[in-house]
Amino acid sequence: MSEFPLFTKRMRHRSLLLLVTLLGLILLSGIQTSPSIPWVSGLLWSFYLFVFCLGGFLLASNQAWLRVFAGLCLPVILFGILIEVYPDSIPIGLVSRWLILVLQALMLATVIRFSLQHETHNQMDRLIAGICGYLILGLLWANIYYLCDLSGLGHFLTSSGEKATEQDGSLLYFSLVTMSSLGYGDITASTGFTRILSALEAICGTLYLGIFIAALVPRRDPPS
Image (tube, rainbow, N blue to C red; front, side, top):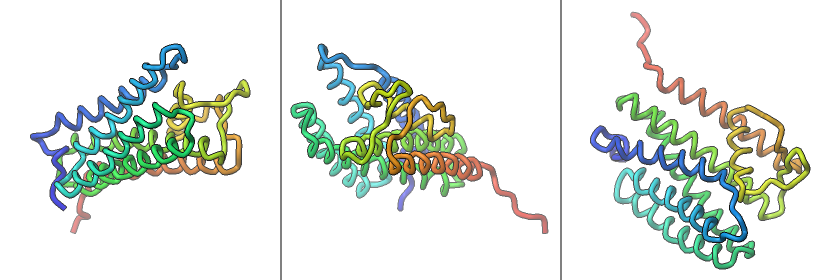
């Protein structure tokens, strides 16, 4: 496969753009929307879709990859519009989230492939790629938790006994705290299935950091 244009020296500003938009998405996810202002929720959801559509474009290594991402982005946008029109429709919500999950997984695989395997590239480019991958991993697991909530496989409860929701950023917060192994305990999984999922995320987050740091360290040939 050809070189990834996102992380070439000439296109480095694109990787920084993706990193900034991912950070912006995570920060904006903590804004609690008000039912009296429905356009705020739609605006945040539009930005969410924009970030992943942008990421698909930036991470495309060649025209074949770009066609794959474009083919995914179009139905993601379509179902994103439908979920705003029919917010209580569980089937539409499930399809929309599964499409986003596939898009996130492809983005994550592309970033990991570059940051771990392309040792000849600039270290700063690989560092930015790794940070983007870590953030995408947290967003991916938050999406998995939301799918569990929609499908009835399990919920997440706050320390006060209330249900943690995506609308106020609680599920993304739980994902980031679990992935980084902070474990505050203010949000917990309510079923055995979601508890196992959260434990797997903690393992994935730890392994990701360990493998990523090891891949950044220059390898030295043993003395002859």
